[in-house]
Length: 474
Image 1 (cartoon, rainbow, N blue to C red):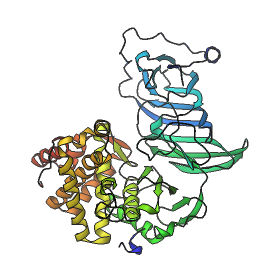
Image 2 (cartoon, one colour):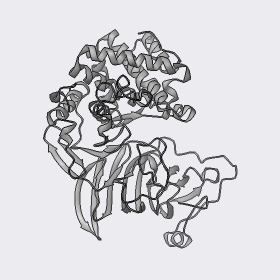
Image 3 (cartoon, rainbow, N blue to C red):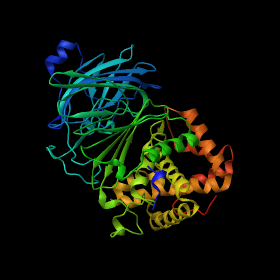
Image 4 (cartoon, rainbow, N blue to C red):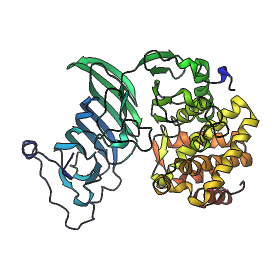
């Protein structure tokens, strides 16, 4: 048993543009591209520099009405943008727009940006609803009163964006009375406005901005180098699962190994949920809480096939450790393409293994590594870490995805620590994060940094990521 002091618009398939709004705004709507399947090439060297979103969101109806202002760096030219198909563009200021006909189901459109590199959009609509974002196969529908949370995640394209670059983010969202709101940034102000409250968030360096709305309340504030604000439903006693000292210790442990987190505060939201899982955005973590998996792990679960591979020793603690590690690996540095997603998942898994060893000792650490090896061997012939999310689509078994994208890279990092020493590995990771903070990184770049110029070692690391099977050590 873990000791307490150790833990813690699309309309009819086509994007709608309102002619009158376009006329008033002076927009020139470009003709469709002549060649089907061709996409206007984005401006070379272009990236999102800053974004501001102002809007209104009704969580009960999942209705959003907003404007967004995007500023780019680099030369002016075509910008490929994504926006959820349920949202209808009303007007665009700053450039002429082309809707790509072949991509109408993906939310992709192209805007030709003016020399000042600033574009403004107005849009609205009712977003598709997933009653439980942690459910691997949720049913679509309109949320009801019983649903406690609504997620406006950056991956659902609720604002127009070119790609998932790090940028300066600002969000001002009005929410009806009776709902609270947390964002992946610093809460600057809450003001009464229009029958509700206007929440203002800012993040100087983030890979997208996400919001969570719900009928929750603040439960506690833990002081420290990174103040922690804990939230949950009324009457929930989070100390049944975690201790204040344990949560603070976990942050200190990661900061000692990987460097300062560098956020003004961290919000952790506990919500009811049967599925073992959590979500980590920059400065915001959402964790499922359910008594049924207090001791969830494959060796003790009444249904071993349903146990998560990520429940290492104690489900409460392991979930917190994994999602909090994503504040560094995902929040401060992230992946470049979906084929590189294993970097942040493998690092978060390895980080939680290190904390497990700190709390429970070498024996518990070795036992989990042995289980990881068995898990990877079971599924090693079905893919490689670089397959990323394709593994979920091909096999529809979350255990295969977890074994190859989470566990196998963590085993590689543990083998590397055996070769060069744990202190040296953490030093390399700390230096890498300091150098690449606020950037997306690819597999080749990351493995080059891990191998520190040793070409033979780099080739062995590449084998872990791109070859099937389970290599033996390094």
